[in-house]
Length: 436
Image (cartoon, helix red, strand yellow):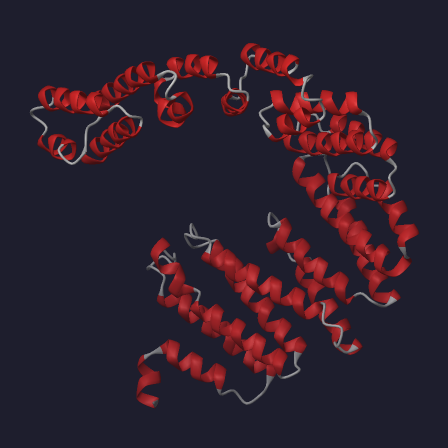
């Protein structure tokens, strides 16, 4: 074994890690040495870890994280935290000198942060351990290595909040968080994102220690952040205060008008408030907006708000609006045509886009059999003209099989023969055609 460890540094470091004398500080040093040995052995002469080598380079970090789990099992949470932080630190340094396109290094960091969070939430932790762990996490979160890595920094602070169950620790964390916000300047997306995450930590502290009344006040004072607005809306929904829901959503739509995803979210809440409060006209108006924006689900819901004899006079207006708006969402348009049996309009749509015949031919047979066959032939010839390799040829043959499924057996034979003659100098194409 002595001969082996002399030759193989990795094995030497692993043995030292697993058979240490129980001294935590010494174990930490050996852990760092192990991580760095694996990195060094998988780096080029410039110290860079290439794309294909990152998996092997992080094996040392994996082993140390396993050691951290074992330390926790041995009722040594502080040492488990130190080992986890050492993994994060070494991996963050590695990120500066490695190709982590597959996210292997980031995954180890995320796994370490998740383990820290799990430890911090353990209700059986002793107060002395909590305070020590809290201080180490605050110190780590303050390090400049987290500049540009806001999420990881916030993850550490969220773990801190789990440990801050005394007035002293909570006060220390509150002071740190407020100072952190004051040091961030400007109104860029990144600053707002940080402020929202920090205030969510503060909110959970208030909710945990000060009760629901104070928590609701905190939400009300932070409605400029989408997470808090959503909490306020959910609370109002539960209280059936639909007028307040509508106000919150309208304010949100105005504030976030440049953010399509958030605007859509507030509109959905507003639509639900109209629906639950029985405001049928407003509900229908919003459903119409969603349909014109590409949502078929709201089409079905809108249809259900009308009597059977009323609907035939309503849906043609929707089709008209979809046909005449600048941006038409074809999927919702064609689904409505199919739903309402508007086959002539569906045929016209397919004639304008021959490649869509594969999708819609089932809905147009047998009424427009000949038209469908012609569209298939047009589509097949266009694809054959663009085909340049066997994969393309197989795609053309797949379209021919669809023509056959549509009942065009004779047309299938005709087009195969036509392509055989036209592309006589393409043996691969002829081979694929012979298999149809």
